[in-house]
Length: 357
Image (cartoon, rainbow, N blue to C red; front, side, top):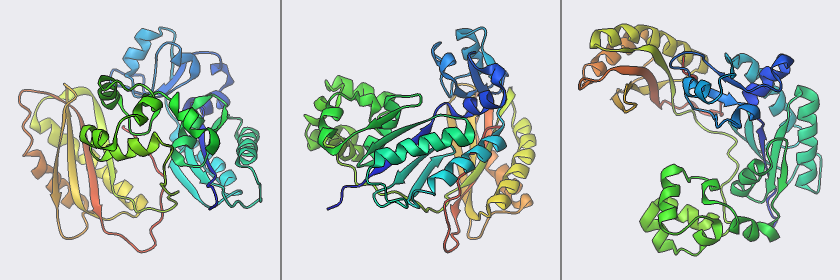
């Protein structure tokens, strides 16, 4: 049986790196991409900013407190997509088995590759060099026989790193791996594992399948397999888009249903634009409400035909809004999403990021 050769490519601080490339004066300074307002959120932080504890999804106001001389740059997402297209064009010179995860990240199956390279390591090196020559940006690469280990390896020596996990060294590599690095292990799961006396892969492997499934449900089986270096997930090159949506975080909280109703029109307008752009048709409309205490709720309506008309979206969204009980809270975010897709034949994956606006 042929051992798979999987490469995971992850661009280093992608959004900020593009901004630094286009404006070299930013280099050497702590920089984040995000909106510099009271509700702004960090999209990406460069490595100088990360030294202060700044990370993506952090409030920009918090980032400013951690680093008073922080530079905040508004994102140029059309530019990021342009650079991403250049990067993915390079990938296709080596294989058609590509699973894009985002604009700056992808898995490549190079077991059988277009250039007949015997070693995946050499392909990863060449791809990194070509990305640098084409875009001026650095990428980190992980190489292994499965997606789990390739992903972990790409993070292992960032930035501009290259890490290979050979099948013969996989268990030794996993033994020393902190559980926080395992796919599917978030903050709460990591805390639970620590209470079970598990902090690394070796300790995780010592737990029985029964214990793991009891503690973590279906993910218990995943953790059991990963601790043994088992991950048979295929490279997914095609998929059906499940939803199209948009949301808006307000500079000042909404305090009444009337204010929320007023905001539905621009949201619906943007939603219709995205539906048309992505040629998406779905039967369900979901209203998302996030409160000032960061708790959120959703309300949905499902019909028998596509929800795509502006008037229909507004009518349904208004009805869903009537179901919202604020309980004395204010609202910081509203979102509208169309889901339950009506699937056309031969639908291909359409790589797109949805940004708060």
